[in-house]
Length: 347
Ligand SMILES: Cc1ncc(COP(=O)(O)O)c(C=O)c1O
Image (cartoon, rainbow, N blue to C red; front, side):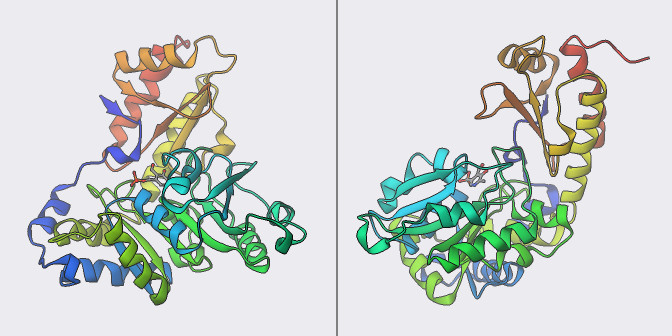
């Protein structure tokens, strides 16, 4: 099976497993795990923040961030299809007691004007205080779309001007950085806090980091413990993260090139792929108005040995390239998918 459902499908490589086996470990809960400490130092440096905290999942990193920036009853703004609003089981309400307001986006992006317009004219007269703006880069639900840096800075600047704390859900921040040819810190440093996931394109079995100021990370440390996320010999996993920083960042460009090749081949074969929207490692196929419906298409492709997944959009499926997808897999998927969907074979 060529598994293109998600970049979470990656399994640790031999090199990563060797790094895991060789990891020096200690009691992470006592801050004595040297590998975790080193991962946090490296992550902070890469992201342009004073500190970073190693956590088991990006969901936990996002949820901790929300608690750092708000009080129960406050408002969280995010693009309406952001992961933090639709895929975290209502965590913003459950863990932080937040009211969530989704702003309609274009390719996962909102504007500075939308942020300003969302603020109450007289904050002292409203019951709920706007507290946080969360952006997502790359944006999952729109198909791995990237925020141009100037747009990002303008929206974050507007949020700051109106007194909002800013959080970046950068689960796939490294994909955005590699796609734009910029340092991760160029995207991450302007936010108060940033989440980065280690278990997607970076290929770790699990793990994420939250970065921010020393003061925020001290508070985050306590929140992590409250979530049950304080660990023991967690260096076993952090070693995978350090290995990924050294070996799996630049290669994300290969995933992006493979996604582009897939998209171009499928589009040339007549599949409904919008090439303009393929910016990183996602290819979205919109089956609206196509001869085969999405569920039938996914079933036929599964049968033919290529797994795609559905998305939040009723007619859209996606293919995601990652560390475990080779050039040969792409060659085969370029042929198999159009054939399984009844497209005429090219001469
Ligand atoms: C944009 C984004 N944020 C957060 C997450 C949550 O990651 P995790 O599965 O590590 O909790 C995901 C997972 O797909 C994601 O795509």
